[in-house]
Image 1: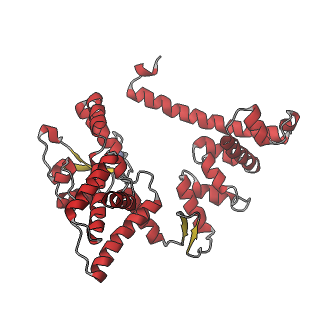
Image 2: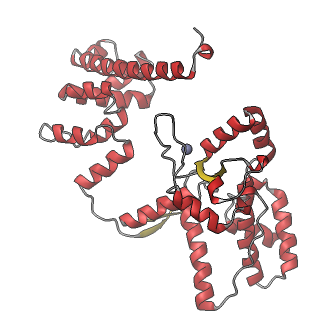
Length: 357
Ligand SMILES: [Zn+2]
């Protein structure tokens, strides 16, 4: 039977069963690797190490070979690991993290504690069990224009950083910490300059009109608060989507069908589920065309914001507002709108200065 002929339920069931099979195969594979190493068959096959054997003879990637060999050796010491892998309690990634902490004395308790956890959760758990001392704050130059910044963050700061990453995902898809910190400092400096130096507040950047812009701030806040700043998509069995980033406001009755901007007609959706709903409402083809035509209206919002910051900077430097606007128009014209939103304000400033100069 072709996959396309399966019903949704059959397709998901089949995928589930494949995942189960692949975990079972992985467990068997690790047991085989351990046995091959025990019998020294890799040496007889003219490979100096299990790693070489896995890469050259078995066609594994270097990465795959490393993780599997480590897991196989660990499973030889603790055969119970194989059952855990087959059950899906542990993955190769989480086993790799346990490598240094597993001993006969810690095995039972540790494996129980990490069962079913993600890599990040296991990292957090291990850090809690064996804390590492703080690092000293330092800025080390890496090259003429690049620097390494290091410091120890409190748990609260870490949470703030992650929250900022989530909230600005639209403009900083990779969640680059340098971008988050720079943006935060721009805002802090603007505020400090205003407080300490009495500088006038920057002109509000003119945002383009889009559906989200027309929803009032208060409504936005109410909907995000009601929905717990998390995607509200829930499947038939009641599992709710865990996404806390790429969040958007979605109209229950679409705007195109006269849906209102009232709190009752809005809900929080992650970008993926927003797109799914749009596809279901308007058809996949229509949505794909819209995306091609439009890229992302919010990106233009952020681009406007960067230009707004650059504009206030230039006005503060003494340029006249009209000439600043012309210079920024020239700079904007050189970049695609969605690129512009990811370019640091400093770069926009530099380019605008070159035009003004
Ligand atoms: Zn979602």
